[in-house]
Image (cartoon, rainbow, N blue to C red; front, side):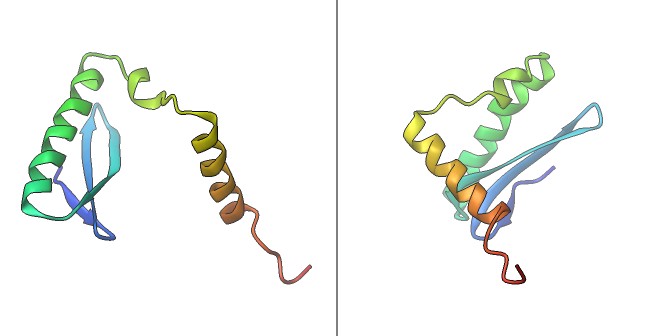
Length: 84
């Protein structure tokens, strides 16, 4: 599957055994970054084909950045309820 533009950022996608894998990168859509995105796709595809998919789903990050990401998610999920 191709590299494609998602809101100005590049997304790589591929399908293995009926399961779709995708990730939106932080790369802007430029010709040079498309090459980088293809490289990232190839690096992500290798563990999937080898059966090591847990390596793609586990992301270790510092508590500060994880808590900020959780707050952004929670605001979107449980935002203001104007009808209450």
